[in-house]
Length: 202
Length: 422
Ligand SMILES: Cc1cc2nc3c(=O)[nH]c(=O)nc-3n(C[C@H](O)[C@H](O)[C@H](O)COP(=O)(O)O)c2cc1C
Ligand SMILES: Cc1cc2nc3c(=O)[nH]c(=O)nc-3n(C[C@H](O)[C@H](O)[C@H](O)COP(=O)(O)O)c2cc1C
Image 1: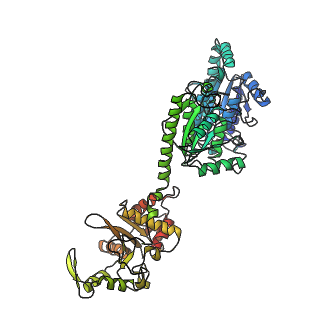
Image 2: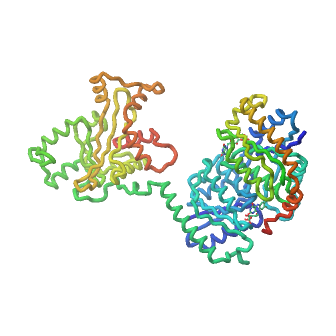
Image 3: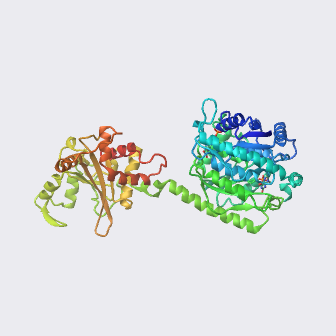
């Protein structure tokens, strides 16, 4: 069974994106092991020059390393990814590089009707950058609009169509993870590349 | 011009901060640029509202009092930094100091593309509705390979770069002026309306106190005015003054003439003040407009806007229903610009009328009925049925008014229309 890290893309205590990931964890329990990962404990990224990588960052990097893939649920703030998630990704690309070649599935929930579409596009752009180099599942989008009304009291998604869509995408993601496993000829090289990648040396 | 500069970094060393400092010192003849620090701003957290903290209130105050903002963004992972995005989130959550603010984006990066992706992304963020800033279009200033761009005194080495940066800032300064003028259309002249009528036009009667209760008598004597059986030649006809008075005073309208010097020089005294829809008293004739309106600054501002819109031809007519109208009475004040044959502005023709008798007469004659709006109260439904045309013209004056927020709120209209007569 695949093991996935499910990253909650916000530091807020209450989040419909967290609810969505909790639902996925339950709903797909027989297909995969999903562990939620919080980003609230990280300090503000200040591009430290030589201080050691903070412990919570190392722990997160380890968990991602050990996982078969990462699911990220992103809210949308000002038509973009929230700063707390950007912050986590800055830490996770500075002297640690757990995302290199890691299969990633992006989902997102928003209060409005668009379901964080702009934030998801933004997140793709970020994950594609040289120090993250994630393998984002192509041509897929899971947009959960009107997220405040999307769940019942038990935290289950109310709309059957939305559940069916998520089922399909999750299946695709499992396949994508398998396929991605075969694409590892350049992996070591990529990892080395990224480790040696230095914006200072461009 | 006062600008503030924000470098999107909380690192100890930032080339973007150096770039802004360079702009502040080298282009001080173009603008006064003050650097704002974001180091003390905590990472945005919806569950821990820090809007009232000193660091955020400081940014709010500085931004609000500035004419425009320059943001220098580093690029992290093909986007802008979390530290800058966090500041923008705070400034778009409970408070919105960037709303309508002109912003110029610049950026420096180690890479030869010089933060182009971060800048594009930042532009999109700043234009999101919760932020609603006005970003200078085009004119990207990208400083690539920034590690080699400055000399040991933090001066830009390349003269071409300096020139380009300067011309970009010049464009921004113009842009700020244009955007801020658009935001404050009252600056375009309404303020200059002199309701005290201290000016003089060719028909102003000099040497008579405009405030005098017998201004009409005094001014008539001074000008040897026609009266009684004297004939007056008109376009088109010939009447005696008595005939002219009988004619005007039997109009089903209360007429007022305010000349282009904003002096109230005539009304058709058809009834005693207490019987009029808009009370006028004989001693008021001759007064400057400032004397016939309450001193409430909001009212005065609105009167000035109406007159100015008519004087400058922005609208040919303004109409405003008064407060307290109901199903049997619908009093409207109409203001119409008057012009001579050459098209020169001659003042305002104000006529006040209760249009309800006309509406009722028309309905009775044609066997029609007003259709009530089920969502509205009785009087409101009449409101809706009647003055669609009015709303447009009065609204267009309101549009000219500055406040971006409430659109043509009825209360505003009501207050001010009352003003013109109270
Ligand atoms: C500063 C701020 C900006 C926001 N901007 C957006 C936005 O651009 N689009 C949107 O759909 N919701 C916006 N929201 C509202 C919700 O936070 C957003 O829909 C979010 O995706 C909900 O996810 P959550 O329940 O996991 O927090 C914003 C909220 C905040 C606090
Ligand atoms: C985590 C991280 C990610 C970075 N990503 C980028 C990038 O995507 N593009 C780029 O040009 N520089 C990148 N850099 C390098 C510089 O930080 C960047 O060029 C910056 O704009 C330099 O400006 P500053 O001195 O004001 O921080 C990155 C640096 C870090 C620490």
